[in-house]
Image 1 (cartoon, rainbow, N blue to C red):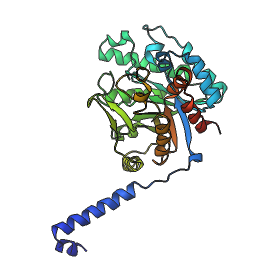
Image 2: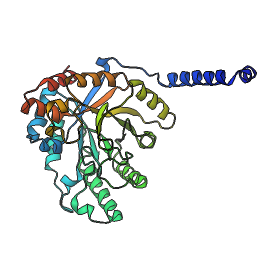
Image 3: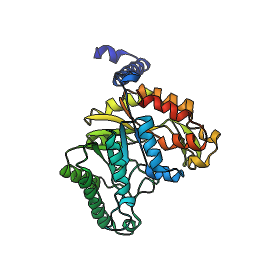
Image 4: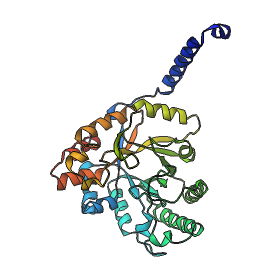
Length: 337
């Protein structure tokens, strides 16, 4: 066989190589695609986002639990809300969110760390930003320790997410990542509790390997249409569902988390300014009713089984301030069964 290959012209050798390469990539992109009724959906909820939209965040939260009947949530223990003053901890709002979820048998992934969901990505108290790196790391670990110890007896907390997309450089107003410190955070949480650790990464802009190696549960983001501040233009990612199947299969050669989930599935607009400052046509450039339905189907074809949608605050804002309940009602079909 090798002798025959050597006798081929360069053009034929390249053709054979490309065919083999295509075949390898085809094999790596194969993954079972679940039926819609086999999928599991959850939501990320942000008290901060609800307040920024001028909403009654408690009213929204309860309506989300009772009307959507969501059973899987990702919540954030924002450090700048919990310890806005050094050594003065405020737990009331997060306690309330967890208790209301527990009443309804809702499972929670609780995100902890300096970098958590929602802009500006890092939610470090002002007092902690003023101290040097070594001291801030000590304070970060103290806040994480207090948070885990406070909530580890809540049985509806099923996992701890440590930081959010920590390996996504150049996004957010954040200090430079120190992987060694991330490992210290993970080791601390493992020493305090035996629940699984979630590490997340960008679906389109990161390699996943460093995050997945550290994770019991690996969570990717999944976006299709965004606005690029660098390009000063709207961007549609030129990828197909097979991109995520291929990427997962490749990364599985180097990392073996117990579970792979889509931790942030785009279901709200992404424009040059906050979406509440855009008109309906501008919002629709990156997300509307039809695009919502499209990304639900797109995500199903990626071979993942569990998804946390990003945008419940927007659906409620559309419903209550824009007289547009279509998104809320469409999303409800995913949860109410």
